[in-house]
Length: 464
Image (cartoon, rainbow, N blue to C red; front, side, top):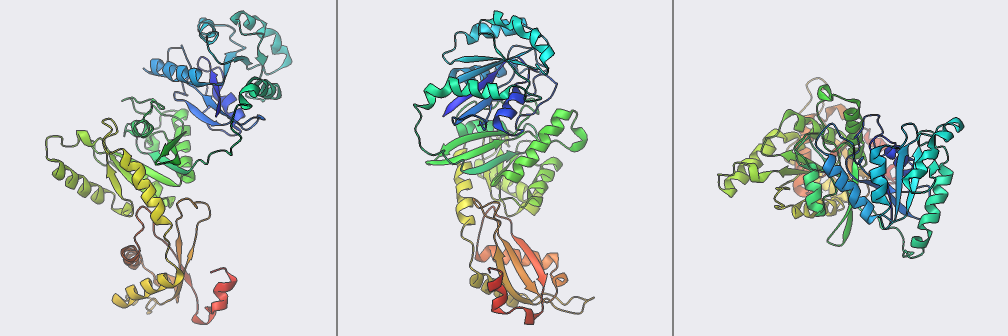
């Protein structure tokens, strides 16, 4: 795949350019320098030739934390692997010593370099960027990422630069992104370490400082000849402790990543134990009705002096007690740092996907539920003085998540108010015992119907 790397010092507008090229707001755009730290990639939507665009962290400036060296490393990797490099400078600030140093590095790059002079919002600003020719990378192209100014010229420049490489590309169709797996959890639970361990690559920055990852980053990978997309997300802290607008935006991206994922990995810091914030994130997954796999990370730090069997038994009891409401989610015990049992994450993800597609037929569903009701009849409601009766059950599939489908079991009852939570839980367990689907939530949709309304033609008309 052809790759366009966007590089430059912090706060020159790289992420805004990235979002324009990607056709949607993926990277967080903010006035605070150093917001982007990882390499973020997405398909370029505005060019004639198919390619990926990669946003990188700002190079060379002193950041407000200890990530400068890692950010530079990330950008260097992008430069080394790029088909084309877009070098972004700030028209308002003029040439800086960092710009000069970067231009020296880029003149040695194998890939062609296009100089982009950003923040030229009006014609009157154009005289301010003539000095950038001193960088030795041509006169440059004046653009405004904020207003989209001259982006048609940028598109033409990109297409012209990658044309020779595009001709060498295979005409095959684009590879599917496969199952989308969101990696979520509280800060410093080991989400980026897990992503890197799965990828066997330093694609995301790993640090003990909470909040290192700020964007939701799509990371393609291949496992057992299948394609997957890992979505590494920012750690979710309680709302009251989000101390900057950047962190608020990051949390919004994480919540959006959960919604668009086919499967969610809830990463738990096993050494620290399950906290109230872990339970809140689990509740969010439950509210979004998402398939889930719990990843108990940092097993190497969990009672390291005890025997392995006892540690596993204790961890199992701990997760089932603290996350009892997420009982449909299986779990794996790993150490991302030590690369221990990491392959089980994708193996179990595949298992969840495969089992989710074994949806019972309507006849089988009704037999399971009727047998459960005969075994343990529902109680008589003291107020309505009625007992719940199940006339018929059918299945509605969620068309928004066909990769890992989550069916809704529609129950036609004499009165939907008669289906109490406790009995719904009983039916859930009976259904799971008869038809296991690990990782998939069991969703019921009770509806009040009279028996005379339930003729076979009723279901035929509705596609049931």
